[in-house]
Image (spheres, rainbow, N blue to C red):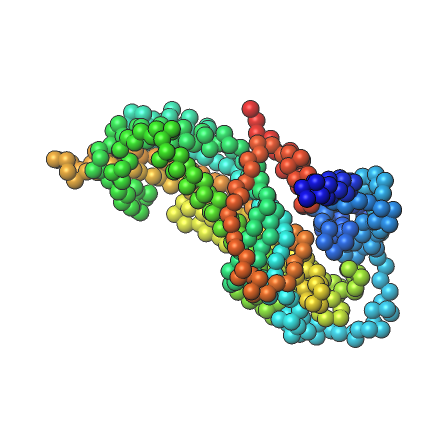
Length: 505
């Protein structure tokens, strides 16, 4: 019996090994302009496919034995679909030609609707066109943060603590990196109703975190130096009075801050604490990323309570019907929109001519989304732009295929800051120490998010309830971009900033 099992296992291995995994990388460009074509769909079949990135680049991994009949299907809005044989594929550039639209063919099956009639039909079909029921979504998600410290000045006006002098403050400021970026990538499956308020469950298969770990170490070192200085000069039962101009607040000091706890790293207690911290880290990573991904897939035009509500509040926008385009073997209206008065966005909608579903939208803000400037504190949300793409499923409804967004904000502060130590248990004056400064910071943050849904399969409520969520993954730290990390997986090809990322020694 054991011999039979062993022989069966060997045969299975032999048949699996005969499949050659193939990875194809290329760039898709316009045949006339020779410019990159972003968001093109590259597919082998319904379950194997990717989308080209902002620069038209893609990489697709095929985990099956390739035959002479296998080919890649490449399609994009406004372009002719192209079939390329996979066998012996070697091109680094793939050229697509624009699709000529025969208007007579469109008008045979579609009434010549006005823009007002089209918008009415979009609204009337909105609830029926999009499938927000229970689904299992196999997806890849990338979130990138870019921080630019434009200005960072702290001037010491007065200090009663010798160590908190201008030289020390300057050394702290010099250690703060002027430009940082941070990238998290996740491959997994999300379970639940797609609608915004529905709870979700998730299984993460693999994740990476690309950032500079030395920044953490630097700040930990300075935190220790700060703590040592405070313990030396500040009394245990004191409190801090923090003032900035007219405004002030009181901050108590936790007495445990002064307790020196020596930890023996070999004890069973320490090992157990370490295990508990790692368990909590996995739970928090899953919980936070699940919430982020579900929120991002619902940041669309489908609800009135989102900021991308150009359909539900269409009376606030001016729409123009431009022409027809061709997408996924069907005709679509091309409709531009811009604000009439105070709304935030302009963009382009692509609407199917048969069921009036919006299958793609490109949008960007036309003015700052938020602005605040008062008493030396400023804040501006100056950028939000993105693309959302839907595809039709087996039920004849639409689900999310791809989305990306870029969000930019700037924060500034130019104010005096005074920290005073007070102690009511000391005879005489309560005031013990004082640090008085002027601070001037300007920080620019940009967040870029991308998601591709490889497969969105309907599931029942019973299937959702029976799935057990197990937090068992934390992201693998990467000090530099490693193309081997995702080898064998289909993901969104990274942009040049990610490819160039490397922690300097």
